[in-house]
Each structure stands twice: as structure tokens, then as C-alpha cells.
Length: 436
Image (cartoon, rainbow, N blue to C red):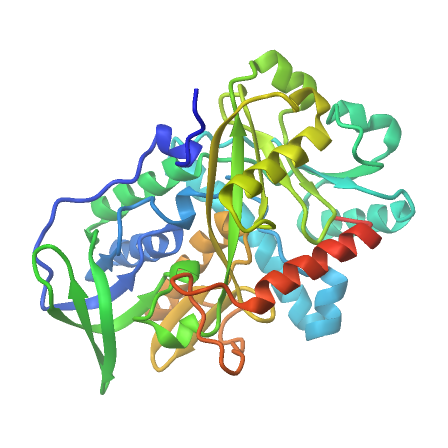
């Protein structure tokens, strides 16, 4: 079988376009983008009785929401102590609390809406490269349990085989509040819920321009029905994140798109997958540029992903396969059935954002953890319009850019993105992190 370049997730839930339809001349709220962020905002607003139009440039499921690894980590780039140094203890407490709330809210949403997205509440183990920090890790896990009721434990060398057959790690850190989903199934279920709530969704429709005129906005859209359609709105949510193009120049200059890529093995069989991953949990690594991996929902394959470190797809796929074989030598000769890539977005301070500029709301900057953050931030953006429970530690945080940086996934990658990845990889070689 030849390798497929489409995401594995698309086999069960391929990208979908809605039937072409005439755009309205006016909408109370326009949402640009129909990923987790945009559809979450649409569901919240439509259920509140608002007039909502969602405009998606491609098909639903073509971009980041249906290209990720489906691990519900909700990671932040900085741990609690780093957050305290950067923002002070009060802000750090709020940011950390929101990360736990966002993860729990995704679980609530999937459960209450009875969504079939292969949700597996299995926990995640982070592989560690040192046993030096055991006391600090144990104390930190005790703090988290006392504050949030989330259990976790340090996995000593003697217990590693209970979680993984890999001998790559010295120890581990396990948390029980992180699981796995089928991201494309979740996205299409959110599309269904949004439509049932009354939101109007237009696919394969590009926003080519937007201006603010007084309290309202005028947007110009293009699709197969009309090459130039003007649409006015009272509110705009730009939910484009890493796929922000030239129509949103302010946001484009403030996000750095980074290529993320994933491989999925051939069918290995449930017995072999369970032999390699006895608890069928999710996995990460205590590295600045590490791998994440997991069993597929059917338990027959293994998925592994990471950041782009090679310039060509062929070299990148080979590097991922080498990484998988480094973890599990038994898989050195396993066939790779799927390889794909996509973009994730990093603000310059590597912290998620719920920004407002010139009246437009920009939920964005999930730093590769959008499985949790995207839906949460879309909901929060909607609440800002509704004026209900819109409090977020990430609201109105500054979003800086860099001189002569114009950004965007539709232009060449910035030189400093590749330099940063190389720098972090070198640091990992010299001194891996001691905790997850």
C-alpha cells in the first residue's frame, strides 16, 4: 500500500462543503473560519438567539482542526513557575486555572452533547529524561491535586513498563485528566450542532477585504456564486489562527505559523499496540521540541507527530519514522500508511490570545494545543459579544509583532521560526527538561 498524504482522520470524516447559497447583505455577527474556534463561537451565539453567519474559505475540516493529533492536553508553553516569573503569581494562577477549566469544559461539551468522537479518557504520560527532579515533580502534582482535584503521579523507572515498552525514558509523569479524541469527527459534530442552532455556514467562500465604518463592518466575500459580495456586520470574530491570510493583515503580522506533521503506521493489530502501550494512553515528552504519540482510536495503529525539522516532506516523514523507531525499535520496518502536515500558530510571547483590535475579536495563538484551546476561546469570544461570563486570563493581552515581519502561512516561513526550532532542538540535546 502506498503512503497517503491526507490525514488519517479524513478516512472516517472527510472535509465537507455545504451547498452553495447566496450570502446575505447583512448579519448581526460574522465569524471568519469554521474550525473548532469559529464553530464553537457560532454554537454559543446561535443558541443565544443571535443572527450568525460563518464564512469558511475552504471545506470544513481541511485546516488545522482536523489535522492535529487529537490529544486533549491543553498544554501551555510555560509551566506554573515560569508563568509566575513572567506575569506575577495572580496572573499565573488565573492562566493555570483557565487551562484546567478549558480541558474540563471540552469533556463536559462532548458528554452533554452526546458527541461521537471516539473520546477516550485514558490519561497521558510524559516521558522524562532524568530522575533528579522527582521530589519537585511529586510536590507539583500534589499542588495540582489540592487546587484542581486532578490526580497524577511520578512514574519511577521500575514502573515505566506498566505504561510503555519503550526504554527511551528514565522516568515518567502521568496525569489522568488528559485523553484522546477523533478531531475530525468532533469538528463535523460541531458543524451539525451549529446548523441545528440556527447558524448559517458558507463554505468555499473567501473574505478578501474588511473595513470598519463607524460601529459596523463591511466585509467583501468571493465564491462561485458572486466574485464580489459586500456584507455588513455589527460584530466580527476572526477565527483563522494559523491559516490567517492577507485579508486580516493585523493578525497575520502577530502570529508565526509553524509546520506540524504526523505519521500513522500501518495496521499493527491491537495486541502489538497494547504490548507497546499497555494502558493505551496518550504520550508526550519532556523536551522543548519533542514528539507526541498515541494509539489510534481503534487501537490498531500508532500515530506520532512533531514540528517540522526538515525542509522536504520525504525527509520530514523519514525523520518522524526514525523517531518512532527510536521509541519502539520493533517498528523500524513498519510501513507508514499516512503522513500529513499542517500549520499551528505561535504569538511572539507563546501565549494564547483573546485579542480585540479595532472592534474585531481575535481568539488565536494556541501554540499547537488547539484541541482544547480553540473550542474554549471561540466560546469566550462569543461571550464577549453576549456580555456573559466573558472573563478570560487571555483577554486583551498585548500582541506584538516584529519589524519587517508580515507573517502568514501563505508566504515564506520567517527565518527566525526555523532558527528557533533549531535552537530549541540543540538545547534538548544538551539538556532535556526534567519535568513535563
